Image 1 (cartoon, rainbow, N blue to C red):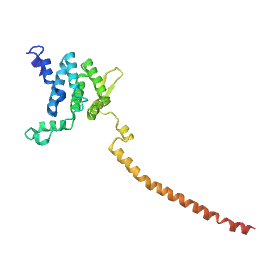
Image 2: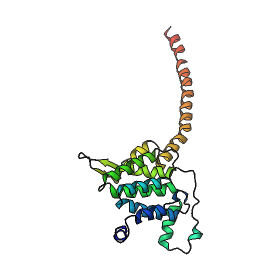
Image 3: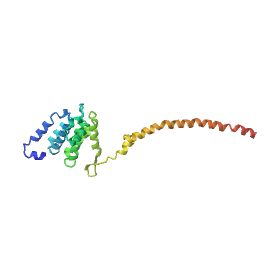
Image 4: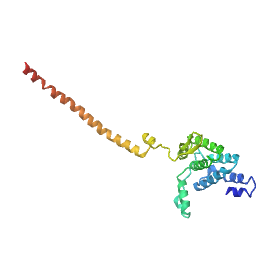
Length: 224
């Protein structure tokens, strides 16, 4: 769509349009509107020149790391919307504004990683910085790390994504999965009964030793 518009308008129209659309985006509280703004801006960034690309990425980054909390959209406010729109908005209602932006970054990175190394490199560095940012919302940092953990490079320095990070076994070892946590709790619950059994065995052993030693004096007297 952007290519069709760009053929019939002045050269500076698209940058000005994006600038106006993103004005005040860091204060946007409507999840669905923010998602649409991020989607449109990232679509423009994918084909824009490098300066406009940097401007879009930096402007959207103003949403990330803020202390502002967005109230989730209430289901009753979406009664007149179509089912597809409801599903989209419902998914956004449980995301922070920062996570909406990060998901846009991730999709844009996947689009650019095989076509534009300069833009992809900038996005990669941005995602790494956000993953380290303590002030950023947790879900946004997790979205960034999920992509970073899937990145691989081969012998020819070609970067690609893997579907499985093979981290399930590591997460289980570190007790970071629900099944591993339940198993650990069950083992801890069984430990008191094991201790009681071992203590009972220890108290019985001295009694057996005493009864055995009492058999020796009569034997010695018979020998005399």
